[in-house]
Image 1: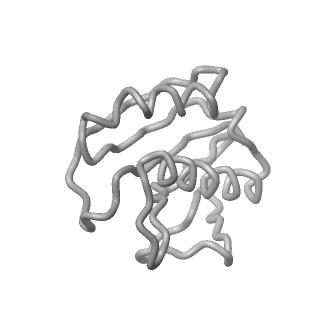
Image 2: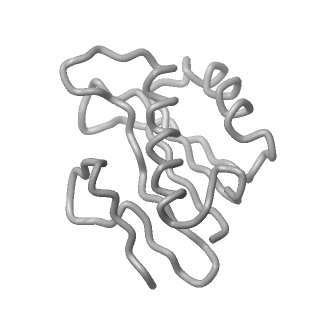
Length: 118
């Protein structure tokens, strides 16, 4: 197992941005809020994906190699918009789970974690 951390990306706790195990990369959940700026669902989703994409790149992979994606939503009202954005970033249609949940910060509208091939 190899831990991956990207200095330019903040973390909210004692974990790795990603872990490589065998031929798989497990990217920790990425949120898309921005400090001191109110962000829409679309902005947060796209920010989350861009962070995950950076982590995958540092790990030697890419969004195109995603095999499983978990998307967490603060409200089911974001589901259709998420589907549209998901198709834009994942045209290869990896496996996906979508979870409606309550986040620790009320500003967070979505979080994304990814498993990809190394």
